Length: 109
Image 1 (cartoon, rainbow, N blue to C red):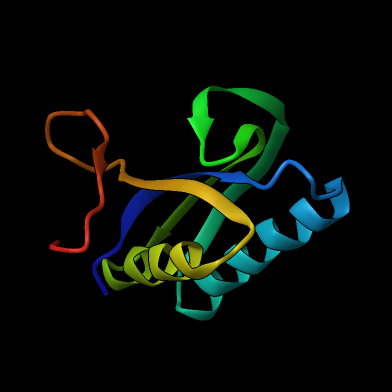
Image 2 (cartoon, one colour):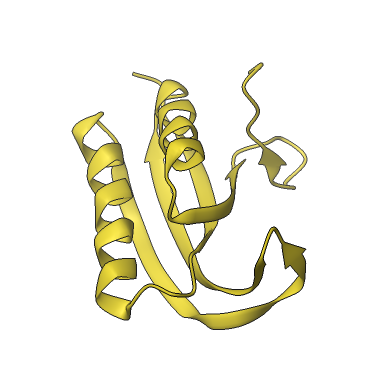
């Protein structure tokens, strides 16, 4: 299995409690691990004001997860984040690109 390093940053509904945000972070960590990946870290940042409104949201709970897995796992994580009502916005980046700059994972990859 050829693995790569990824970074997922996602914004969770600000109305949720810290315990609920931690459950969501643990859920996505479990998704990675059940699909053969390893999670290096999954950290909840604090609630922050958004740079611009997203829908009706002006702030959100940020979560950052660093993980290593094969190329299909980020697509599944992204799919699950897209259908979750608790995730306002998410991005997953590959950290292994040759130019050293992270690149965003898209459905076409």
